[in-house]
Image (tube, rainbow, N blue to C red; front, side, top):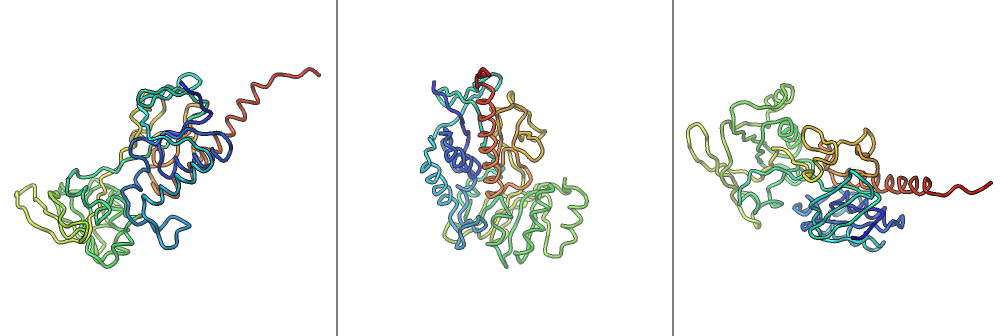
Length: 318
C-alpha cells in the first residue's frame, strides 16, 4: 500500500490538466489513467477548436502532448484501471487491479462514454465520417449531405447545429414520433434543411477509412424494407453514459448517473473528493471545458490539503 497526497482517477483533458496543476504545485500526484487512456479524444481525428493549435491537431497527438507535459513536472502516470474506492473514511482508499493506494484527496475524471448504435461498421469508421459530437466535428462536413440518429433533445439540437455547415441533414429515428421537447421538435420540423426518416434503423455504415462514409444500409421496422441511403457522414446522438459505476455507493449522483457537484465548483458531497470533466458535465462536454474543471479540481485539492495541514499544526506556547 502506498500513500499519496493526490490521486487522479481517469485521464483525458480533465485528468491530465488536473495532473499538470497538481504536479506543478509539488503535490506529486498519482494519475491512474486506465487501460485506454486519453478519453474520447482518442477516437477523434482532427481537433481544430482547442486553443494553441492554429493548424489543428489529431486527438491522440493532443493527449500525448498533454501526458508528456504532466510527466515533465513529476506526475506518476500509470495505465491502471481503478476497480474499487472507499471514500467513507480517511485516508481514502483506491484499488487499481491488484494494488491498493491511499490518498488525502481524490480527483475523479473518468469521463462519459458516448452511446453508439453498436455496429461493427460504425466503430470501423469512427473518426472517418462517423461522430458522436456535432460541436466537435460539424465543421468538417461543410456542404455535405449527412445523417443523424436519435430522437431526443440532443439529436434535435445537434441536427439544427449541423445545418450551419451541411447541405442537408436527415434524421433517422426508430419510432414515428420524437421524444424531444415540443419546442425542439418544432425547430427541427420547420427547418428546410432537415428531413426525417421515421420507423427506421441503421443496419450498416457503408464506406472505408480512405473514402469516409458513403452511405447507410437502412431497415424500415414496419415494412421490413432494406435500402441503401447515400450520405457523407453519420452523427450518433443517442446520449452519453457517465463512467461512474464504481462511485455509485460512494458519491451523490444525479438521475442520469453524473456526479453531483456544488454549483460553480467541482466539490462532491465528500470533502476532499473532487469531480471534473464529462463525469460531472452533461451540458458542454468539450475538451476545453473539461480541462478548465481539471484545473479547478487541482487548485481546490491544493487548498484542501493546506487547510488539513493547518489544522494539524500544534499550538505554540505564548
